[in-house]
Amino acid sequence: MSGTSVDVEMLDVFKEELRLCKVTSGEVVAVLSGGNDHPDYAQTFMLAAQSFGATTFHVNVLKYGQVKVAGVQGRHALTGNRPAIEMLKQADMVIDLLGLLFSAEQAEIQAAGARILRVMEPFHILKQMFPTEDLRRRVELSRELLIAAKAMRITSPAGTDIRYGLTQYPVISEYGYTDEPGRWDHWPSGFAFTQGTDGDIEGTVVLSPGDILCAFKRYIQSPVKLTVRRGMITAIEGEGTDALLIRNYIDSFNDPRGYAISHIGWGSNERAAWHHFASTGRLASEHVMNALSFYGNVLFSTGPNTELGGSNDTPCHLDIPMRGCSLWLDDMHILDRGNFVRQDLRAPGR
Ligand code: FE2
Image 1 (cartoon, rainbow, N blue to C red):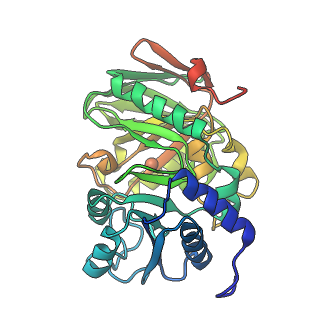
Image 2 (image 1 turned 90 degrees about the vertical axis):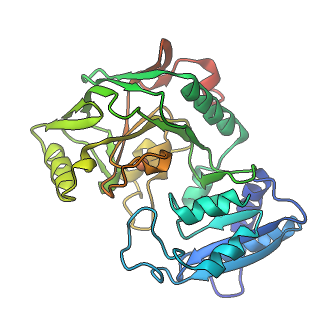
């Protein structure tokens, strides 16, 4: 878009998003962006917020201005930029187009009371996976069930059988909008997750054709058997390219903490598409929210746990949404081969 024109459809969709976020007259809505990323989003979010009577401003920083190393979680272009951080702390809501994820600066802005909405996907994905109040209900229910559980067991027809102790870490919900002071969310999304207790994750995960290696935007083609002992992967076995890729990728970080088991949970967004990477999802502009959020996936992952308050900050992270798994919380059956067992976890009409 040019500097002055606004896409009317985008304005309508962003207004609907901010309506879900309960933006009201008298609130302050700030947009944070880096470099030339998404100037259309920044302008359109401000127009949408002003249509509700909010006051708006836009903080733009050099994308790599304050850090020399890009792509490291928790470090970003706002690090050390005290005036920009103080500006954002004045807001009731921050639209984060930069990516503050997991950082001390994000925590500080949240602690000041600002709710934060992360937005990074292209517009067609924002529309495709647009959140609903029923998605929020199901993700919040998922979170409550995870909070109450002492242990999780996951199995699959291919041979997965793994147990997570769940007594140590908090549970995070992401449903694609946020209307509570200080709460962070990511549009679009649709899942809840936690982290197994340190040293208390035991068993086997067999990755199967159709499971997704998000880091490579690639579907698993050949089975990969991961052996997990006391929360660490101790063996990666498989005849195909996938086992080689996973082993080579983790080894490349030269960091034994890359073999740790990371967050675990399930996806609930019926508008997210498992097949997405097979259509347009391999475009560089697209991220992985379809894969992380698709309905009934078990989102297995490896590497860091700082997002949930742990101490493992390895940059070696693999998100691996798995299809067709069964899952129990203690004795409560949640998923049966990828289908929600409880009616109250099912999307309307499913
Ligand atoms: Fe992850």
